[in-house]
Amino acid sequence: MVLKFDQAFVQAVEHRPKTAISEVGGIPVIDLAALDGGFQPPEAPKLLVAEIGAAAKDWGFFQVINHGVPAKLLEGIQSAAKGFFALPLEEKRRVKRGEGNPLGYYETEHTKNVRDWKEVFDLFVNETAENSATADSGEERTDAIRNRWPDYPPEFRSACEEYAKGLEKLAYQLLELLSLSLGLPANCLNKFFNDHTTRIRLNHYPPCPKPQLALGVGRHKDGGALTILAQDDVGGLDVRRKRDGEWVRVKPIPNSFIVNVGDIVQVWSNDEYESVEHRVSVNSERERFSIPFFFNPAFETNVRPLEELTSDENPAKYEEYNWGHFFRARRASNFKKMEKENLQIYHFRKAL
Ligand SMILES: O=C(O)CCC(=O)C(=O)O
Ligand SMILES: [Fe+2]
Image (cartoon, rainbow, N blue to C red):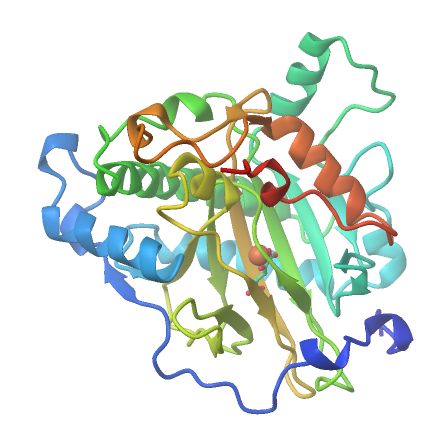
Protein backbone atom coordinates (compact mmCIF):
# COMPACT_ATOMS: atom_id res chain seq x y z
CA MET A 1 0.00 0.00 0.00
CA VAL A 2 1.35 3.42 -0.97
CA LEU A 3 -0.33 5.48 1.75
CA LYS A 4 -0.27 4.63 5.44
CA PHE A 5 -2.72 6.49 7.60
CA ASP A 6 -1.16 8.75 10.21
CA GLN A 7 -1.67 12.09 11.93
CA ALA A 8 -0.48 14.06 8.88
CA PHE A 9 -3.76 13.23 7.07
CA VAL A 10 -6.10 14.30 9.87
CA GLN A 11 -8.24 17.34 9.10
CA ALA A 12 -9.23 19.84 11.80
CA VAL A 13 -12.67 18.95 13.18
CA GLU A 14 -14.46 21.74 11.29
CA HIS A 15 -13.09 20.57 7.94
CA ARG A 16 -13.90 16.87 8.24
CA PRO A 17 -16.54 15.60 5.82
CA LYS A 18 -19.99 14.74 7.12
CA THR A 19 -21.01 11.15 6.52
CA ALA A 20 -23.93 12.03 4.25
CA ILE A 21 -23.39 14.68 1.62
CA SER A 22 -26.31 15.45 -0.65
CA GLU A 23 -26.16 15.06 -4.42
CA VAL A 24 -29.53 16.76 -4.70
CA GLY A 25 -29.66 20.40 -5.74
CA GLY A 26 -26.21 20.07 -7.25
CA ILE A 27 -24.34 21.83 -10.02
CA PRO A 28 -26.10 22.57 -13.34
CA VAL A 29 -25.80 20.12 -16.25
CA ILE A 30 -25.31 21.81 -19.63
CA ASP A 31 -25.83 20.07 -22.94
CA LEU A 32 -23.28 21.17 -25.55
CA ALA A 33 -24.95 19.23 -28.39
CA ALA A 34 -25.98 22.52 -30.02
CA LEU A 35 -22.30 23.26 -30.69
CA ASP A 36 -22.04 20.15 -32.80
CA GLY A 37 -18.30 20.01 -32.25
CA GLY A 38 -17.67 23.70 -32.94
CA PHE A 39 -19.28 27.00 -33.75
CA GLN A 40 -18.74 30.09 -35.78
CA PRO A 41 -18.56 32.88 -33.22
CA PRO A 42 -21.49 35.05 -34.32
CA GLU A 43 -23.78 32.05 -34.35
CA ALA A 44 -23.06 30.63 -30.91
CA PRO A 45 -26.38 29.52 -29.56
CA LYS A 46 -27.68 32.33 -27.35
CA LEU A 47 -29.46 30.02 -24.96
CA LEU A 48 -26.31 28.04 -24.33
CA VAL A 49 -24.29 31.19 -23.69
CA ALA A 50 -26.89 32.34 -21.18
CA GLU A 51 -26.90 28.96 -19.44
CA ILE A 52 -23.13 28.99 -19.12
CA GLY A 53 -23.14 32.54 -17.80
CA ALA A 54 -25.78 31.71 -15.18
CA ALA A 55 -23.90 28.58 -14.04
CA ALA A 56 -20.59 30.44 -13.81
CA LYS A 57 -22.24 33.19 -11.80
CA ASP A 58 -24.42 31.15 -9.48
CA TRP A 59 -22.17 28.13 -8.97
CA GLY A 60 -18.72 28.67 -10.47
CA PHE A 61 -19.18 25.02 -11.53
CA PHE A 62 -21.17 23.09 -14.15
CA GLN A 63 -21.16 19.72 -15.85
CA VAL A 64 -21.12 19.35 -19.64
CA ILE A 65 -22.56 16.49 -21.67
CA ASN A 66 -22.43 15.92 -25.45
CA HIS A 67 -19.16 17.86 -25.46
CA GLY A 68 -17.73 16.25 -28.61
CA VAL A 69 -14.61 14.73 -27.00
CA PRO A 70 -14.48 11.12 -28.29
CA ALA A 71 -15.12 8.56 -25.51
CA LYS A 72 -12.09 6.57 -26.61
CA LEU A 73 -9.73 9.40 -25.60
CA LEU A 74 -11.12 9.34 -22.09
CA GLU A 75 -11.04 5.54 -21.89
CA GLY A 76 -7.45 5.58 -23.11
CA ILE A 77 -6.17 7.96 -20.45
CA GLN A 78 -8.26 6.34 -17.70
CA SER A 79 -6.79 2.95 -18.44
CA ALA A 80 -3.26 4.39 -18.68
CA ALA A 81 -3.74 6.03 -15.26
CA LYS A 82 -5.01 2.78 -13.74
CA GLY A 83 -2.08 0.84 -15.14
CA PHE A 84 0.45 3.37 -13.92
CA PHE A 85 -0.86 3.72 -10.35
CA ALA A 86 -1.04 -0.07 -10.02
CA LEU A 87 2.77 -0.25 -10.40
CA PRO A 88 4.95 -0.86 -7.34
CA LEU A 89 5.98 2.33 -5.57
CA GLU A 90 9.65 1.95 -6.63
CA GLU A 91 8.56 1.94 -10.27
CA LYS A 92 6.40 5.04 -9.85
CA ARG A 93 9.23 6.79 -8.04
CA ARG A 94 11.39 6.46 -11.14
CA VAL A 95 9.35 9.33 -12.56
CA LYS A 96 9.07 11.24 -9.30
CA ARG A 97 8.69 14.96 -9.08
CA GLY A 98 11.75 16.76 -7.69
CA GLU A 99 12.63 20.28 -6.48
CA GLY A 100 13.95 21.19 -9.94
CA ASN A 101 11.33 19.50 -12.09
CA PRO A 102 7.82 19.62 -10.67
CA LEU A 103 6.32 17.18 -13.20
CA GLY A 104 5.76 13.46 -12.72
CA TYR A 105 4.69 11.26 -9.82
CA TYR A 106 4.02 12.57 -6.34
CA GLU A 107 2.32 11.13 -3.27
CA THR A 108 2.90 13.66 -0.50
CA GLU A 109 1.00 16.77 -1.55
CA HIS A 110 -0.43 18.94 1.20
CA THR A 111 -3.41 21.25 0.82
CA LYS A 112 -3.58 23.96 3.48
CA ASN A 113 -0.86 22.10 5.36
CA VAL A 114 -2.74 18.82 5.73
CA ARG A 115 -1.64 15.83 3.70
CA ASP A 116 -4.03 14.70 0.95
CA TRP A 117 -5.07 11.04 0.73
CA LYS A 118 -4.01 10.64 -2.89
CA GLU A 119 -1.19 10.06 -5.34
CA VAL A 120 -0.84 12.10 -8.53
CA PHE A 121 0.97 12.31 -11.85
CA ASP A 122 1.42 15.72 -13.47
CA LEU A 123 2.25 16.60 -17.06
CA PHE A 124 2.39 19.76 -19.10
CA VAL A 125 0.39 19.92 -22.33
CA ASN A 126 2.91 22.31 -23.82
CA GLU A 127 6.19 21.28 -22.30
CA THR A 128 8.21 24.23 -23.50
CA ALA A 129 5.93 27.05 -22.30
CA GLU A 130 7.50 27.55 -18.88
CA ASN A 131 11.09 26.86 -19.96
CA SER A 132 11.06 29.40 -22.77
CA ALA A 133 9.37 32.02 -20.60
CA THR A 134 12.04 31.48 -17.96
CA ALA A 135 14.84 31.66 -20.52
CA ASP A 136 13.43 34.97 -21.82
CA SER A 137 13.28 36.44 -18.33
CA GLY A 138 16.95 35.66 -17.70
CA GLU A 139 15.99 33.88 -14.47
CA GLU A 140 18.32 31.07 -13.50
CA ARG A 141 17.17 27.50 -13.58
CA THR A 142 19.10 24.42 -12.71
CA ASP A 143 16.75 21.93 -14.24
CA ALA A 144 14.55 22.11 -17.33
CA ILE A 145 10.89 21.40 -16.83
CA ARG A 146 10.17 18.23 -18.78
CA ASN A 147 7.41 15.68 -18.87
CA ARG A 148 8.58 12.42 -17.34
CA TRP A 149 7.13 9.41 -19.07
CA PRO A 150 6.98 6.03 -17.35
CA ASP A 151 7.96 2.92 -19.35
CA TYR A 152 4.76 1.24 -18.30
CA PRO A 153 2.04 1.10 -19.46
CA PRO A 154 3.61 1.40 -22.94
CA GLU A 155 0.70 3.45 -24.31
CA PHE A 156 0.78 5.91 -21.37
CA ARG A 157 2.40 8.77 -23.25
CA SER A 158 0.28 8.53 -26.40
CA ALA A 159 -2.91 8.22 -24.33
CA CYS A 160 -2.02 11.41 -22.43
CA GLU A 161 -1.03 13.31 -25.55
CA GLU A 162 -4.17 12.38 -27.47
CA TYR A 163 -6.35 13.26 -24.53
CA ALA A 164 -4.59 16.61 -24.25
CA LYS A 165 -5.39 17.45 -27.87
CA GLY A 166 -9.06 16.55 -27.46
CA LEU A 167 -9.41 18.58 -24.28
CA GLU A 168 -7.59 21.58 -25.69
CA LYS A 169 -10.28 21.93 -28.32
CA LEU A 170 -13.05 21.78 -25.72
CA ALA A 171 -11.17 24.23 -23.49
CA TYR A 172 -11.07 26.88 -26.23
CA GLN A 173 -14.78 26.37 -26.94
CA LEU A 174 -15.61 26.85 -23.27
CA LEU A 175 -13.35 29.89 -23.05
CA GLU A 176 -15.15 31.43 -26.03
CA LEU A 177 -18.57 30.68 -24.60
CA LEU A 178 -17.54 32.25 -21.31
CA SER A 179 -16.26 35.36 -23.10
CA LEU A 180 -19.57 35.67 -24.93
CA SER A 181 -21.45 35.21 -21.67
CA LEU A 182 -19.54 38.19 -20.26
CA GLY A 183 -20.68 40.27 -23.24
CA LEU A 184 -17.24 40.16 -24.90
CA PRO A 185 -16.21 39.01 -28.37
CA ALA A 186 -15.81 35.20 -28.47
CA ASN A 187 -12.06 35.22 -29.02
CA CYS A 188 -11.29 38.05 -26.62
CA LEU A 189 -9.36 35.87 -24.13
CA ASN A 190 -7.62 33.61 -26.65
CA LYS A 191 -4.57 35.86 -26.90
CA PHE A 192 -3.54 34.95 -23.36
CA PHE A 193 -3.32 31.26 -24.27
CA ASN A 194 -0.87 31.21 -27.18
CA ASP A 195 1.84 29.62 -25.06
CA HIS A 196 -0.49 28.20 -22.46
CA THR A 197 0.86 26.53 -19.30
CA THR A 198 -1.90 23.94 -19.09
CA ARG A 199 -1.29 20.98 -16.82
CA ILE A 200 -3.02 17.63 -16.76
CA ARG A 201 -3.09 15.78 -13.48
CA LEU A 202 -3.94 12.13 -12.94
CA ASN A 203 -5.38 11.69 -9.45
CA HIS A 204 -5.66 8.36 -7.66
CA TYR A 205 -7.49 8.18 -4.34
CA PRO A 206 -6.96 4.74 -2.78
CA PRO A 207 -9.56 3.40 -0.32
CA CYS A 208 -8.98 5.19 2.97
CA PRO A 209 -9.24 3.42 6.35
CA LYS A 210 -10.48 6.61 8.05
CA PRO A 211 -12.54 8.55 5.50
CA GLN A 212 -14.27 10.53 8.23
CA LEU A 213 -10.97 12.14 9.29
CA ALA A 214 -9.12 12.75 6.02
CA LEU A 215 -9.75 14.25 2.57
CA GLY A 216 -8.51 13.22 -0.87
CA VAL A 217 -7.88 16.90 -1.55
CA GLY A 218 -8.47 19.48 1.14
CA ARG A 219 -10.74 22.45 0.47
CA HIS A 220 -9.22 24.82 -2.09
CA LYS A 221 -9.90 27.00 -5.13
CA ASP A 222 -8.20 26.40 -8.47
CA GLY A 223 -5.72 29.16 -9.25
CA GLY A 224 -5.84 28.98 -13.07
CA ALA A 225 -8.40 30.04 -15.67
CA LEU A 226 -10.63 26.99 -16.22
CA THR A 227 -10.55 23.42 -14.94
CA ILE A 228 -12.13 20.60 -16.96
CA LEU A 229 -12.34 17.46 -14.86
CA ALA A 230 -13.14 13.87 -15.76
CA GLN A 231 -14.17 11.65 -12.86
CA ASP A 232 -15.05 7.96 -12.75
CA ASP A 233 -18.29 6.53 -11.33
CA VAL A 234 -17.21 6.50 -7.66
CA GLY A 235 -17.96 10.11 -6.72
CA GLY A 236 -16.34 12.23 -4.03
CA LEU A 237 -15.98 15.75 -5.43
CA ASP A 238 -17.74 18.19 -3.10
CA VAL A 239 -18.50 21.76 -4.15
CA ARG A 240 -19.30 24.61 -1.79
CA ARG A 241 -22.74 25.85 -2.85
CA LYS A 242 -22.61 29.65 -3.08
CA ARG A 243 -26.22 30.10 -2.08
CA ASP A 244 -25.85 28.67 1.44
CA GLY A 245 -22.24 27.55 1.88
CA GLU A 246 -23.26 23.86 2.08
CA TRP A 247 -21.05 21.13 0.60
CA VAL A 248 -22.78 19.24 -2.21
CA ARG A 249 -21.50 16.13 -3.96
CA VAL A 250 -21.15 16.18 -7.75
CA LYS A 251 -23.04 13.22 -9.14
CA PRO A 252 -20.96 11.21 -11.60
CA ILE A 253 -22.48 11.25 -15.10
CA PRO A 254 -20.85 8.88 -17.61
CA ASN A 255 -19.05 10.69 -20.40
CA SER A 256 -19.39 14.14 -18.89
CA PHE A 257 -16.88 16.74 -17.74
CA ILE A 258 -17.06 19.00 -14.73
CA VAL A 259 -16.02 22.55 -15.49
CA ASN A 260 -15.12 25.22 -12.97
CA VAL A 261 -13.90 28.76 -13.32
CA GLY A 262 -10.62 29.40 -11.56
CA ASP A 263 -9.19 32.45 -9.83
CA ILE A 264 -8.02 34.04 -13.09
CA VAL A 265 -11.55 34.16 -14.50
CA GLN A 266 -12.72 35.62 -11.22
CA VAL A 267 -10.17 38.43 -11.59
CA TRP A 268 -10.74 38.96 -15.33
CA SER A 269 -14.48 39.21 -14.71
CA ASN A 270 -13.94 41.53 -11.74
CA ASP A 271 -15.87 39.13 -9.47
CA GLU A 272 -18.81 38.64 -11.85
CA TYR A 273 -17.84 34.97 -11.80
CA GLU A 274 -16.37 33.41 -8.70
CA SER A 275 -13.80 30.67 -8.25
CA VAL A 276 -15.53 28.35 -5.82
CA GLU A 277 -14.12 26.18 -3.07
CA HIS A 278 -14.17 22.41 -3.54
CA ARG A 279 -12.60 19.30 -1.99
CA VAL A 280 -12.54 15.54 -2.42
CA SER A 281 -14.06 13.12 0.09
CA VAL A 282 -12.71 9.57 0.11
CA ASN A 283 -14.28 6.28 1.13
CA SER A 284 -13.08 3.02 2.67
CA GLU A 285 -14.24 0.70 -0.11
CA ARG A 286 -13.49 1.93 -3.59
CA GLU A 287 -10.49 3.62 -5.12
CA ARG A 288 -11.32 6.65 -7.25
CA PHE A 289 -9.61 8.17 -10.29
CA SER A 290 -10.02 11.70 -11.64
CA ILE A 291 -8.27 13.75 -14.30
CA PRO A 292 -8.29 17.55 -14.12
CA PHE A 293 -7.14 19.57 -17.14
CA PHE A 294 -6.02 22.92 -15.73
CA PHE A 295 -6.34 25.37 -18.63
CA ASN A 296 -3.88 28.13 -17.77
CA PRO A 297 -2.64 31.14 -19.74
CA ALA A 298 0.92 31.82 -20.86
CA PHE A 299 3.51 32.15 -18.12
CA GLU A 300 4.10 35.87 -18.74
CA THR A 301 0.40 36.81 -18.58
CA ASN A 302 -0.33 39.73 -16.30
CA VAL A 303 -3.75 39.18 -14.83
CA ARG A 304 -6.10 42.04 -13.98
CA PRO A 305 -9.78 42.85 -14.40
CA LEU A 306 -10.57 43.26 -18.11
CA GLU A 307 -10.94 46.87 -19.13
CA GLU A 308 -14.14 46.13 -21.02
CA LEU A 309 -15.70 44.96 -17.76
CA THR A 310 -14.70 47.81 -15.52
CA SER A 311 -15.96 51.39 -15.37
CA ASP A 312 -16.20 54.32 -12.96
CA GLU A 313 -19.20 52.60 -11.37
CA ASN A 314 -17.47 49.22 -11.35
CA PRO A 315 -13.78 49.91 -10.74
CA ALA A 316 -11.17 47.15 -10.90
CA LYS A 317 -11.21 45.18 -7.66
CA TYR A 318 -7.73 43.68 -8.07
CA GLU A 319 -4.20 44.85 -8.63
CA GLU A 320 -2.40 43.29 -11.57
CA TYR A 321 -0.34 40.17 -10.83
CA ASN A 322 1.85 37.93 -12.91
CA TRP A 323 0.49 34.43 -13.54
CA GLY A 324 3.93 32.80 -13.83
CA HIS A 325 4.99 34.08 -10.42
CA PHE A 326 1.69 33.12 -8.85
CA PHE A 327 1.89 29.63 -10.33
CA ARG A 328 5.45 29.09 -9.10
CA ALA A 329 4.68 30.35 -5.60
CA ARG A 330 1.69 28.03 -5.35
CA ARG A 331 3.67 25.09 -6.57
CA ALA A 332 6.43 25.68 -4.05
CA SER A 333 3.90 25.83 -1.24
CA ASN A 334 2.27 22.46 -1.91
CA PHE A 335 5.66 20.84 -2.23
CA LYS A 336 6.15 20.89 1.50
CA LYS A 337 4.44 22.00 4.66
CA MET A 338 4.69 25.74 5.10
CA GLU A 339 4.22 27.95 8.10
CA LYS A 340 2.47 30.62 6.09
CA GLU A 341 -0.71 30.51 4.02
CA ASN A 342 0.05 30.17 0.31
CA LEU A 343 -0.52 32.89 -2.27
CA GLN A 344 -4.20 33.71 -2.95
CA ILE A 345 -5.90 36.21 -5.24
CA TYR A 346 -7.35 38.10 -2.32
CA HIS A 347 -3.80 39.23 -1.58
CA PHE A 348 -4.19 41.36 -4.73
CA ARG A 349 -7.61 42.68 -3.81
CA LYS A 350 -7.73 46.48 -3.72
CA ALA A 351 -9.03 48.29 -0.70
CA LEU A 352 -11.89 50.15 -2.39
O1 LIG B 1 -10.59 14.72 -7.95
C1 LIG B 1 -11.39 15.64 -8.05
O2 LIG B 1 -12.60 15.43 -8.21
C2 LIG B 1 -10.98 17.08 -7.93
C3 LIG B 1 -9.51 17.32 -7.81
C4 LIG B 1 -9.17 18.77 -7.64
O3 LIG B 1 -9.96 19.57 -7.22
C5 LIG B 1 -7.84 19.26 -8.01
O4 LIG B 1 -6.95 18.41 -8.30
O5 LIG B 1 -7.65 20.51 -8.04
FE1 LIG C 1 -9.36 21.66 -7.64
